Length: 55
Image (cartoon, rainbow, N blue to C red; front, side, top):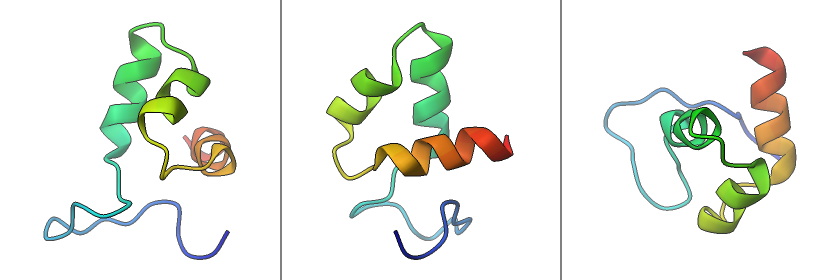
């Protein structure tokens, strides 16, 4: 995996970018990481894991 896990730029949203809030909304509502990954196929499991490790 190349690049940053988190990119903060209010001008960018689209392509393969997914707001972090989406992940936290899924997890807070009781959904699994697998369920999130099914809905956001551009996101890789290792990206989610790395993000959760730094939060």
